[in-house]
Length: 116
Length: 115
Image (tube, rainbow over all chains, first blue to last red; front, side):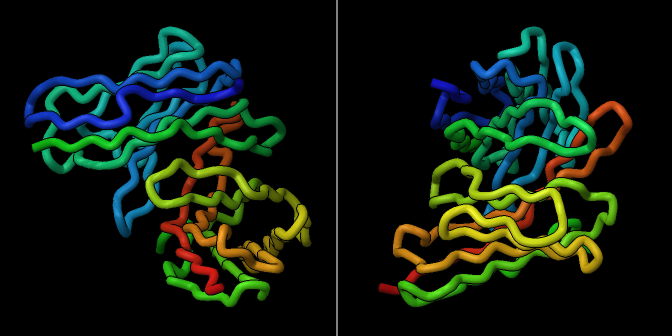
């Protein structure tokens, strides 16, 4: 089954304790992205990756790190989480755009993170 | 000015009627337009995509694009209670010649279908 998986689905942690949220896709997609979703603010892009070893900042990258060592995996790292990073996080993947036209993004199930 | 704007709603529509959802965007270079549906606590799922001016129909759903007016809409005919969800408009902007892209979402319109 074609899918994007994320782990963990729910996480409660304390300020300053490093954490990693994993994301994996089995569709051989080049493009992967992380979003956070907050009430009234919608989905905002954190980081994205066009391919292995190619990553770039989105709209709200502060406090986050990513890596893309393999095509299928795109982990999100919070080195020192703070309460303002409490949010619902989504990983997504898609084929790379062609001729200026983009493809559907497939979303993972989401990770609900609470930082106390 | 927000890059992608939607009325947050809530929009209430009687069952069986047509629901009309609207979205405007600021970047004239935008080439790809998507409508996603999101149930509470779940991930967004694609409903429609449209690239060219005009209408695109898929079952009960019709997407309409007017690039001159920078406007994209989604019509849902014969609305069902299961259509009650938040609808997200998303616009891709090709930000380089190498296919880099940024997917910008509106904040979504909450739709409620009243039985």
